[in-house]
Length: 455
Image 1: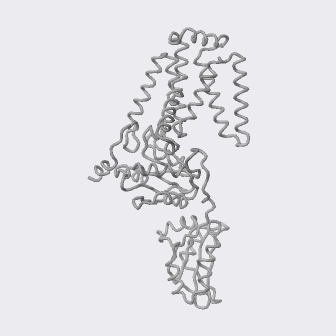
Image 2: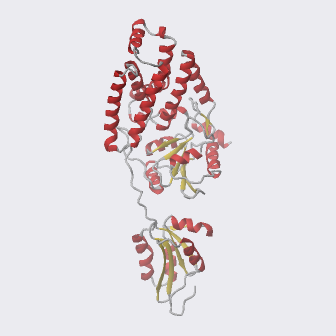
Image 3: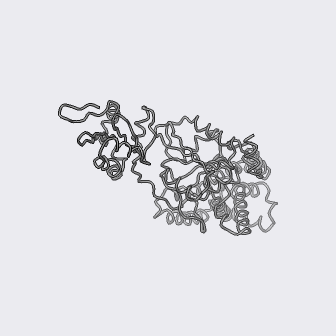
């Protein structure tokens, strides 16, 4: 390093070059530190660096230690020290909150980032009564800490990588090396290395890039906010992905039946858990088949009902001016609109607005003979059954699938419902999630699988 004639230290050329590339941003800070014969240089972005840490960890010790050699030895012993990346990656590291320090022409990178998103959030998407009430945060380090605090086993491995998109977000890959299938882990890493995405902002859009088939109907991964579900899946040999800046994790591979598991089942007695699981499967069948069955029976096969019930259904439809298919489709669209409104409206008014809207419009529809009373019961039962599905991604898939069954029922009656249902099962049988059959019911022993993969 050289000095100007007035005694002002001159920063190294690399630091000047980096500062030039960051300008004209107003938060670029290039600060020289000098006392007697000691000198050093700092380059950082003040909006993403913790100023208090910088003062206490770097600046104050510089003026207190007797020589540059002592200060350099002190800096090299800091836990905040980060491995120096390649020259072209230094700018990315600076934007993440790292500080570039130059001592005697030697460059050191320190992690002194300011994190405002490390607050652990409350569970909102997957609430339970007896389970933990805290979810993940938007900080990758905090999320890893939450999992480490609950999973005290040296077999838990955490690998990090950086995406090559415009956000350059950090990704953490978590797995238990004792039980994970090596073929699955290899497939996941291969997929991550092959990602070519313009921008990743959260786990929600990141999971879409992990799916091989763009127009697939059923989800290939599970997104969860619960640390206990993450640990439950880690012990099951699955791989978990954490995205920096997202309060959700991605679990893969998954099978269809994973989407009907609630963490509440773990905290209940055996028979209570089995009963609630059975109720979910009943709700699943109801939400996907009931609209089609209503159309098939009322339009094609009313003899399936008992005479009294058939007469009741027929009497409720007196005055309805269009076929049952249009009636069901109209009410399903109405329910979907109410559901979307409850999501998009502010929380302070969403419950009141959707409840009042549903009651008023439901009553008005029946009084205007636009739909029968039985139809209101059917649609309400379908909506309630959909909300029983624990994982939100699968409930969206079921909402679309029942429209396919409704179309088949309107064309072919009960035979169409059966054929459509079989078609969905065949479609699921032919699907895979990172090499795992989607409808896999019975799993092999984990130790046997791990031995088989290692051979």
